[in-house]
Image (spheres, rainbow over the protein chains, first blue to last red):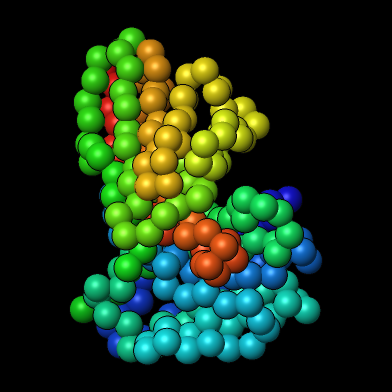
Length: 113
Length: 118
């Protein structure tokens, strides 16, 4: 079993839809959680970063963490064609000097006009 | 802020040659840099972690003699693919951590280097 599970998709939605992207994890030591967006042939860019359970909102993006269920989500409201990309969840433990991130497989999202 | 650059963005080489990829943190000092490899439609695979001035730590299954990493300064790390073969063709991405002042685990990624070995 992988430490982080993420449905690779692809996920296709119409413009304006609410998108829900999810990851589950098995390691209870994971304490910080991130969502990255990666456009084709580009490096990932950080979208959201959170330590705690609950919701964190930034513009059209909301990150949700449920540590008791070991489940995190990213919601995108009013999705746009420019949101079409691969979304990677990433997480790691507070301990450890190198702070290595564990990534999900990435979900490919296509938003069509 | 927190910009990471990579050079070159794309390289095509003949089998048997060595290729060097540079990763630079442009506006911050990176105590730790990471090198990843990504195959088409797959996630990032961590190859190695390097700290400035010390030897890199390689992930299991990554040949340290084939993928040479040098983290010579707080703003520069290099990955050299030695005696490259077609199976080394991939997208190589570096990332950097800000250091103690940054958020735990947060990494800033470069734009990647596409290596094609003929």
